[in-house]
Amino acid sequence: MIQVEGLTRIFGATTAIDGLDFSVDSGEIVGFLGLNGAGKTTTMRILAGSLGATSGEAHISGHCVRKEARQAKRCVGYLPERLPLHPEMTIQAYLEHAARIKSVPNPRKAVARSIERTSLGQVAHRLIGNLSKGYRQRVGLAQALVHDPAVLILDEPGTGLDPAQRHEIRELIGELARDSGTVLLSTHVLAEVEALCTRVLVLHQGQIVAQDDLEAMRSIHVHLARPSEAAIQAMRSVPGVEQVQELGEGRFSVDASCDRELLGQATAPHGLLEMTLRHRLEERFLSLTRRGSP
Amino acid sequence: MKAMLSIARREIGAIFATPIGWTCLAALLLMTGFFFAWMLGLYAETALQAAASPWDDPVNVNDHLVAPFFSSWAVILLFACPAISMRLIAGDRRDGSLELLMTSPISTFQIVGGKYLGAMGFVCIMLAATLHFPVMLLWLGDPDPGVLTSCYLAILFMSAAFVAVGLAASSLTESQLVALLISFAVLLGFWLLGAADSQAPGVFTKVLAHASLLDHMESLARGAIHLRDVVYFLTFSGFFLFVAHQRIEWMRWGE
Image (tube, rainbow over all chains, first blue to last red; front, side, top):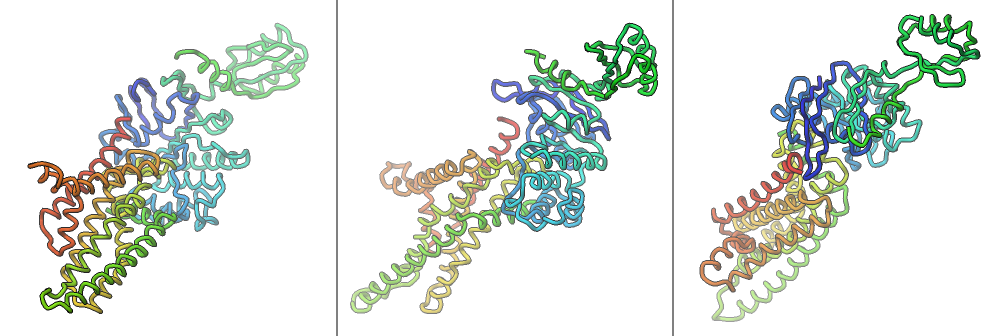
């Protein structure tokens, strides 16, 4: 769906992204992580067609974003960080305008579908300028969806929202991702990535420093009342457990891919107090981006 | 074409949604009304003097009222067109909405064309609001309808040139005020060429006269539609639209 090879973008003396190689398959929801200035927005803008690459290739649904720009743009729905809205228009008029410039054959029908998917029906005739930030974000999403794209590129969709709005938008993106299939999501909120994504790409100083399956970043934390070498051996004997890491004070971290029921049975004689599923995304992200150079 | 028309429609709506559109419309009506009343008074005075004198020829309404009246509009358009066009691209860049156009499956030509059509659509609405002047002239006097048509064409061509400069200036910066100043300075420069041509020696006089906006406008306002004037305005507008096109392409590939 998204295929990127050697993508480079130079702004004057600054190399924003340097030879990126990655791919996103159909149906994947991929988190695009990185510190501010890592090159996430530049990459997303190149994929969406608003910025040209200095060198390298990017394909969306098999269409080269440089040579077949129009076809590639028809396959992408892009929500930029700064919402591309016209405050003087009503939601309905704005989405019809967006549908027309995106060459949608039946704009009204497409707008009705987009409004339904983003639950904007009750406010469709209100001016965008009078909407709350949460609703504006929904309008931005509706704009990205209006031409029914195969790929959604979302650049920090939760920015500036309160926790309730952020939760709503996260749920909405989850629903849209299930319908639309392929999503590349840039965010600073790691909980959002953990809740929505199947894989993460970590960008640091313009280069991809990790492409990890999110499942591999999960671990089970076990808290034992009577920790001992025998307890560690018991945990190691559970199928799927390759590594047992001692965290101190009776706490251990084991691979999340193991059978949790068997792990429970193995640790019960050693005074099992608590067993929780944890993500290691934050530790991994920080360790990757703390480095001076990739 | 649908995409271009949608952009144009949105631009007209955006101009009317701001005080600038209404201010330009009100200023045009107010100023043209003032010029009309003033020039009508001058014309009546001249006509009376000519009628009283046995040696003077009768005063022609086309030369003494219609042509100077429509020529005076250029001053209003010199301010109005840059004001109308200053936000076309600069405004979209500032609020981030240019990204919607840049990521849509349309060409840069369609973006520039749509924005230009939108601003020209608003100019046409402004000009339509002044149609009571020719109606009044035809009702009360005996002007040549051909000259009146030519005058409106002259205004339209001049507006097209002014808006093209405004659009190019708007593509150069994110600040609408800076865009307004750039377009005003460029237009003033081309305006002053008309005054400078009499001071320049030899071949420069001819070159400056050809480059001057006002000389071509006055020629059309006299009722004579010359191909050279039409070509001048089309080339002038085309050049500045090309500048806007290249600037948007540069935003995509060059920055």
